Length: 160
View 1: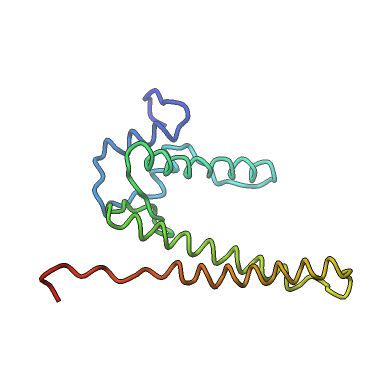
View 2: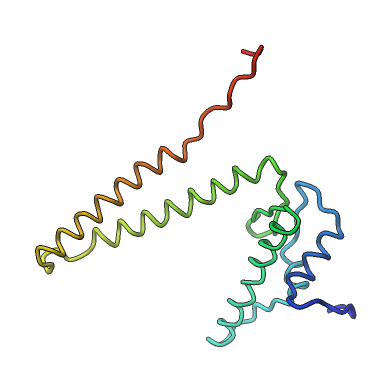
């Protein structure tokens, strides 16, 4: 840790130091830099240390959120390396891809939970409730599949 006085919470200090680097789109922020700036420790040998490490990882989310809301800088995860600064034109597509991935996982998990209810142990009301829930999930999956399909870009006048 440097002798600099750091702001609390650490993610705000890290965000200011990051912005001082004048990051351009495409710049990759290494995981090690964040671990150092946020004073993260991944040495886990007990459940208490695991809980603490989980809270420390929350600082990374807060760092990303702070950069986005205060500086309009969007970061995308580069697995095993760090975080890449997105160009403004990439941010929407990355956000929608993230939503689609999370939504698909939620729908799949919910459908699996509803399908594996032991229906032979349900009374008529519970059986109806389960069937209606399964139908709603199927309907939502169909609707959202169409919603995630982006239309082609509009043609500009004078160009074919």
